[in-house]
Amino acid sequence: KEILLERIIPIAINRIGNALRLKDPAPTGERLQIPSGSCQASHTIPSAHTADGVLDADFVLYISASPTDGGTLAFALGCGEVEDENGNGRFVAGGANFGPSHISWTPVT
Image (cartoon, rainbow, N blue to C red):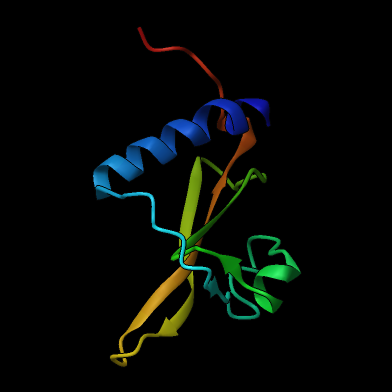
């Protein structure tokens, strides 16, 4: 768990942010409501995210470390699809699960 929280996730956030050229959003004071039932087949979603929403968020990624089957190292999914003001669907949440038995930390030099 420590390896995932303190090393893998921060590196992944940085690399994904760089790949997508993300910028820290300006606070709007708005709350992103996660549709009820989203991602719950694979992740535990805080009830506040479906009831009150997530402040100043455009997308929420839920990450877990639960056993995976066979040789599956990890899996990810989009969930929480909503319709925007133009009638287009988009995901406002996603889930990623890492199989703990496949996680080890070997620093790259």
